[in-house]
Structure formats: structure tokens, C-alpha cells
Image (cartoon, rainbow, N blue to C red; front, top):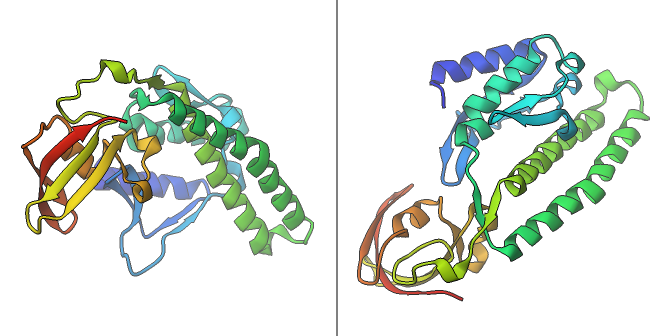
Length: 252
């Protein structure tokens, strides 16, 4: 990632293309790069005008970088800005690491991607068409909202396609059961209050806190990786730190 000054310079350049980005900063959260408000008491004000929306079919990977295939479709200089942004602050900044996933996890991701492309994308196009029919686009808030929703949808589709393109399936039989690894079921005890908790460490794309599945990229996941029964993991969390003792390790 670039410096704070670089980030603000990127936003200033983005505004020259007609975009809007206020009260917005980027930093690494528990699950990777994310957008956060500078002042949490105020909302983020982000707007992507039509000329800057990049359909997924216009995006490609070249030498590990995310690029726009045909720069002539967009404002002068935007293709270069888009490439530099992706390299510094988005996919490129995180690297194109292979995604660890189970066969079932990949199946779920494919199903989600197909739903977004076959059902949600047509819905988004229909919403834009209906909003466009309501009159002057310059004062049509419903149209603006529909276009923003479409842009977010296309970003989600692109991210899923990138995840699937770089996924590799884990063979569970090759994993060491004596220490905590991805796909381990781990029972831990909080040293402060003796509370017992159970987690399953999974790829970020399969994380689901409701079912106890935590990402290997999360603070707890990173802290538990490599530990064996009896070890105590010191884990930094937003409100301080916790010590978790490894009680048991198993696999489904």
C-alpha cells in the first residue's frame, strides 16, 4: 500500500474524472484491505459516475496486474489511474496468491457467481432501465442509486471470478493433524475467564462466524496457525489482546 499522501493524491485524481470520494480512507482490516470512514460519526460519500464504471468483461490480468482491455472506452488517463489503483490499493496490493479452498467451497463460490451473473446482473440492468424511463437523469436519484448498485455488483462478480481463477483445492489427507492448519477444528480456552470455544480455520472465502468458521487471515486464525495442543496463542484484537490455550485439534 502507498502512503496516506499517495492515497489522497489518488482520490484527488479520481475527482478530476468526475468521481466523488469524501470521508474515505483505506487500510487493512481483519479480512484484508478495506474502505473505512475517516470520521466514523459521518457516512462515507462515494460516487462512481457512469463513464468510470468498468464492466468485468473489460477487465483483464496482464503480468499480475489488473488492467482495462480497451482504454479508448473511458476518459483520457483513466485506464492508467485504474491500473495504478488496482496495483497499489486493490487486488494487486494483496497479491495474486492462490486461494486455499475445499471442493465444496469452490462449488459454493461458483454457484454464488452464477447467481450474481444470471439473476442479479439482469435485475440491476432492469432497475437502471426503469429508473432511466422516469425522466431527467441529471436529477434522478433513483437512477444514480441503480448505477451505483450495478457498479458494486460488478466489483463483487470480478472479485469472485478472480478468487476462482486462482483457487487450488486442498487435499486433507496430506495435512498434518498434530498442529493447527487450515481446515483444523480447534478447541481453545480463554486463559482470562476459562471460556471454551471451538473454531474451524478455513479460507477467507469460506469464513462464516455464525457457524464457527474463521479465516486463516483473521487475527485469531493467524494466531492459532502452527500451534499444537498445550500451546498458548497470544492474539491481538481491536480491544487489546487475549491468550488462547489449544485444548484439542481435529478434522471433520
